Image 1 (spheres, helix red, strand yellow):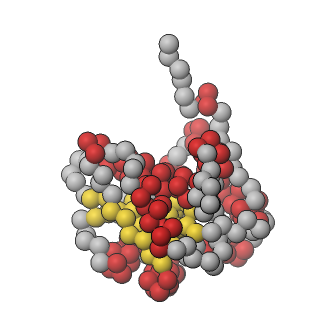
Image 2: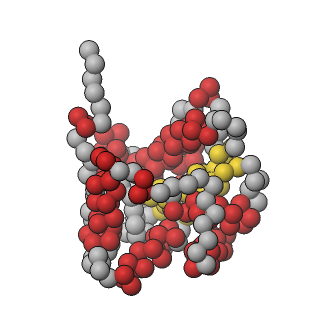
Image 3: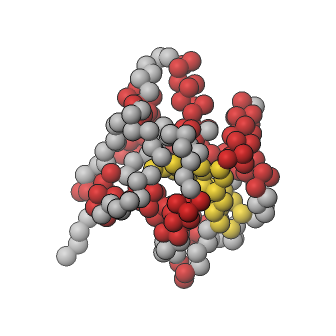
Length: 226
């Protein structure tokens, strides 16, 4: 397959919320990992630990995720609360919620039972046959720096998926299952789960993948100084 050019890759990458049940091959997954490994990092420390789950291993994890979620347990290593993002940021995350529930799933705001479908899809990676769990070492006073490096790795991973004809979605929600993932995959306690990427072959016929959220104009986030 011919890879997409850079501009097309960047502009067409989107979060995939419906995957085909067709798994990628081990060779294809290793190509994505090899691309992502070229991400930059402070002092070339490359402080990421990535575990990819597929097949029976992923099935066990998804079963654990469902059980943990239904029990109301949140074992995230790092706190995230979108309601703290006020000012310019609040309309953006509210628009995101509207996009997912109403536009992508066709679920009215008042339909609480229907919205549960989205939550259920979310915790199992929207049917993705693969999940990459991105861990980072816990080094006192350096969490922000390390997370920045892992974020660049994550972006490179996602762009590689798109360029090669696949798709993925970065999921902070799956970080709430950090304990389950560590236990199932044998990850040492001092590695913290930043987020996960669910990935595979996108189902382009699904309504969830037919709408791409836009971005604010460049002028709202960047200033040129001459």
